[in-house]
Image (cartoon, rainbow, N blue to C red; front, side, top):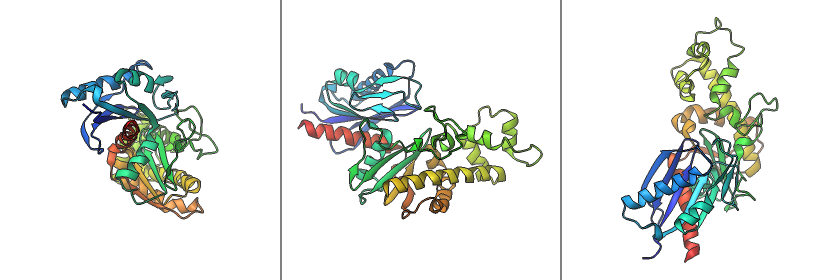
Length: 326
């Protein structure tokens, strides 16, 4: 039987997603598991296990697999097919391509998840008519992918569009997951919004306002999640709305920096924080981005691919490997 299908893999801070796709890019079946971070060798084994299980469920032979595309947050070394101290996964070097090439006897390519998402956007999403396109995810972390003059930017190690590590605060008040201070991700990502709220409330006297955020402060923010901030804001809490507005200002600085660097026609936005709170995230950015960029402001909109764009980009990359084998 000829090589007839590919795997797309999305490695996130919380989940590992694997999908089987036909040669036209249609997902046949997919599954996900909480990521196992017990060791740096177990992630590839987890992908293999999910992939083999999917093959069994749809009566596919692993020997007919013609390529695997893996998308993950970086940093990474694409040439060696491994992650290198990824900022949102508590592991050191994580080998991926080598073990999976050996397990499935097929080509494997590792790309940044933001690069994967913008590739999906250009092929299947809102960016199909554009030659200059940026995708930004506001999720557990902040990442990006960039296409300039119809060229996908990848970089020597695959880290060309790590926009979440642009510095937006010269005072360096908050530390990023990568260990540096002042990065965009340290202030506006899902994993760091609780720290930003805590810092924002340090100068607020308990008697000064009547806000549920002050109750959260009294409880030392135990179990506090970004969704709580946005729910309080949607409920009209003034203090929560002010903090969301400040997050929007910082996001606008990040988006303006992206606009200055890449001059896109369109920026699409995804990730759980943005997808679950589109108006509270996008409106402050649209309102304040002109304060920070001299370039023409691009259209800014939520991705139509929802949470599947990274997976579809990984599939697109795997299909490229498949084409090269023919």
